[in-house]
Length: 134
Image (cartoon, rainbow, N blue to C red):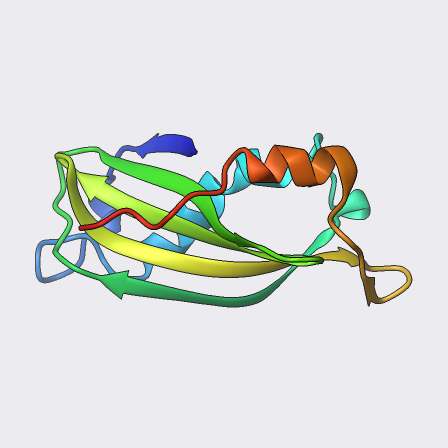
């Protein structure tokens, strides 16, 4: 599991006084950088080997300014060429949002999927686990 702590900026809040729902997908993407480095260590877009096939975010509670948010990132499915990344946002240890992203190992020049094999598969398997309960 990868973890990243996000500090909430005043600009992250909305008129209702809590973190705007549009921030979570952005934070989740940023927190996937460690996972992206397994495919492209220098994060060079010219060498990118992934495409996003799907994502969703489930909101369970409000997030508030002034308290950091921990993003936990792990895999809940590992297929032949695709995998599901599950991410949790926690504030003061409470699960406030969960997102799932399906990514595909992909060759952009050949426009085809690539199998997840060898050391890459082993590295991804190390982060495979069941979804945590709320």
